[in-house]
Amino acid sequence: MRKRKTGKERHSTMTVWVALIVVFMAELLVYSWCRVQYVHTGYEITEARRQKQTLIALQHKLDVEEARLRSPRRIRGIAEKRGLTMPDLGHVFVMP
Image 1: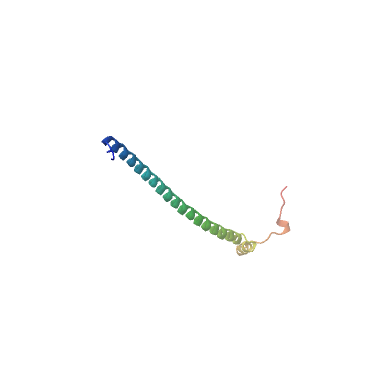
Image 2: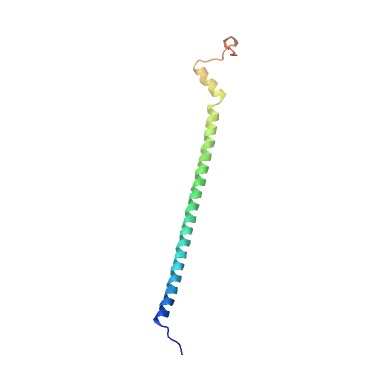
């Protein structure tokens, strides 16, 4: 014959099950939060890499533009258009 559980025993068994369910749900929520953060961080890393590539391409374009602007041929052409010429040896003074 089976012994019937008293109200106190049923209450303690129910408390254990509720505690286990609460712990399980808490673990599930923490795990879900971690996964969401992991995915969000992955998106941020991808965006940062994209921005880096864009900035590298821009830097390359700016380097090319700077080299073009510093070209002696270009500078000489601008000077000639403005009427500037290379100085004669008599016009050059060396400062001590």
